[in-house]
Image (tube, rainbow, N blue to C red):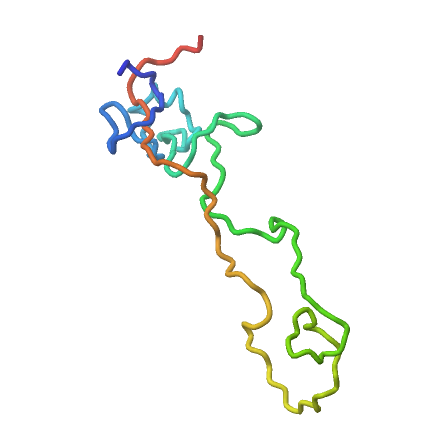
Length: 165
């Protein structure tokens, strides 16, 4: 492997950070021990900028090139999402009904037919079970992730200082 640029990020298929590299896991480093690396990263990924700075944290994230209003170091997206009312597609709940008399043995499409006056005043009414009518759904978040394969991202703590041109 050729000598990397300082702060270069590479994907690796093994479970450790090689010598001179660190996982891109957001760890905070002291500026006074990593001045060249700090001069490239600054506080883009965190730290107080006086004594500390942070490495990028790519755990559970997909890297994205900055642009279109997304600046370097910006985090976005979510692994799970609960739909709000404005996100539910327009749809209808159709209720079959008929205006004819309720005299059929099988209601088919005549669920809300007009009364046939075969019943007497019910007297004492029994309330329906609370789960039989009302809201549906459990308000649970759903998975919002594209298909993925987890690999480790490492950042070079040592290497050639990149020139601008």
